[in-house]
Image (tube, rainbow, N blue to C red; front, side, top):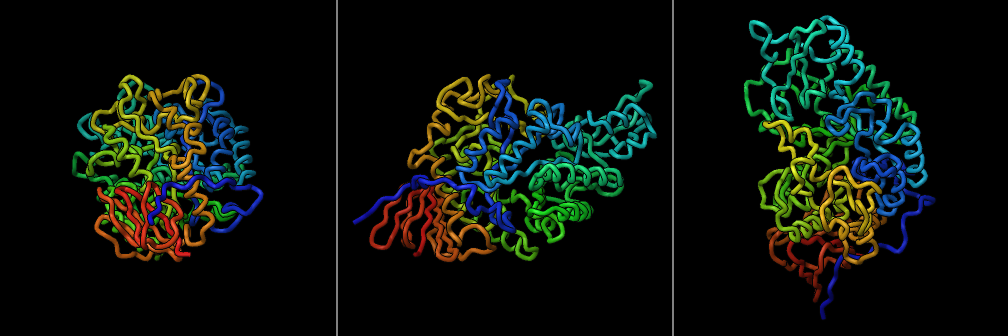
Length: 564
């Protein structure tokens, strides 16, 4: 006799804020599931087509019901929006498009009442060119003390017409822009590793460190539970700003230690920040966006006196392949163990193509992909990859909409694109808009429930069938798969916290590991495989058949078992 299993329906009960949650115990961050909200694309409360803080606040019960532990908000600070808020003009103010400080305070308070923690983005590598410091630096001209807080340099060449060095912007073109001085003459150059509207701070200047420690305290006093540090591998530059001696430098990123990234001096900055954070009760945390050549170098950021977590970009960039996945899991756990930090796992974010689309395409195309690929294949693999990620020891990050199985929108018309890298020829691919399209809440409506006034990026036809409304309570839907997985993760003692897995023998193309009384089997191959039935099936990303002590696991499917 055989029996078939599919994704289990959601539990009939939702997490109760009155009962013990991860937010009420120490070291909550070691096994937390943290949900990334991209505020402009999450929920719009005032019908202007742009998401806002009040929209996020109104949807907090949904996030509590989903079963996440914390919410990370991408930047909502006052900004000209040259790079979607990652160009900050005032770190202590909310941009009017998102609301105001009272809205931020209300959001944080409501989240805490629901047992959710709030992590906010911090952008310390660079400011906006509309930051008061930079505007004064330009107005005061050469010799201004404010110019010392950025990287102003005279140019090379007979008339200073050449950039000070050969560094290239991550967004394409030179990493230097020449200014026009107050008297109208061509003048000094300033460094910007990203857009020209994002001048890099000079972290050798003590005023910069003083300012950011003050900014930390400002938001900690309001009640945030931590900070995600943008370009955490940046900040400190090699002494003398030496030439790199190479063009097409983007190909070197992530493979070599660059003179402007992952410099050892950055760790003293974070040791100072940790002293500030430890002044506050409540287990506040730092999370690093640190693109480093190896996971071992990433571990340097999470030593006991520095940051708490660092994103695992090596895992995000790994193909859907059992051998490659096992290697990166082993290396990650081995690298984090000596520093006592939890591993983190992430599949998607606001800068990369959603994994439902990455996995729909052939391997080797990278993390920014312009083609839709095989949608059904991509969704099947994305569901399986999500269950695998949530079974690994440590903390997991979920990007808004991945719990709906959303694909990237790869066919946005050129005229609606807003990614600044898209407009700079030699930079990143510039197709990040595809993962930033506002998410669908309802089957119908001007923006599928996002807001009453349309959406800042057009949503595709058929978006409503992927909405929360369409998937809510539907057995086997991707939304209910996530809800079931997160509920089980919270209830099972062998899931979440930890630093090791016990690998089990498995057919080629299959990962199988044990964690106490829990077993995870992930079939990354293109064919169904037969494995031992390790016990009772808890959850599966697709249908499987079990008979006579064996389980037939379909292609691109992950199964959770319990041995009790």
